[in-house]
Length: 226
Image 1 (cartoon, rainbow, N blue to C red):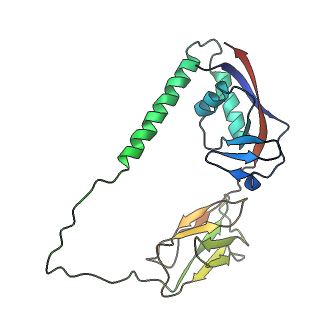
Image 2 (image 1 turned 90 degrees about the horizontal axis):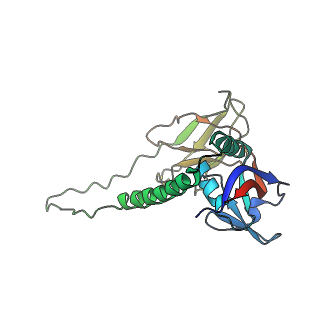
């Protein structure tokens, strides 16, 4: 049963510790300075955040964007404060999401299949043709070229920078492994990636936008005990 009825959430005195330097775990990082787990709420829905906070037995630390915090409080404000079924609804929603995730995982299991080989089957050992180069353009949210962005093909040594026109080019070895097809932007401010298409040299434009800064710290809730 949920303990707290939440009216508003805030993060008082945002923490200045480096999230990436904390001991990482699934869904949270451990802060050695305050000896607390910091929950990463960045991928949570409003209902999920409310569920965690409502069942928290003590103060907890969290991490989310400012816009996410604003949306959460807007959600709390528009839900009628006198709705007695609100917490019951959230609890049912959380259970439903859990069942959905279990079913989704089950559906992803591959069914066994049989491969029948013919005696006269001709095996095709042709390897995919690797283009001598790939190139494309990096543009910003305003559709203008972005200069000096470092790009690399994930899990390889191939890397390059965009020029004044936002153009990049990578020369590929003829034995390049085409399964390595993730072109990533090496920037914390502009996280983005593009799936490469090696059937052509000119790649789709990669549009990037500045990542919203995250806030982190002890989460304060204005609530009433049931």
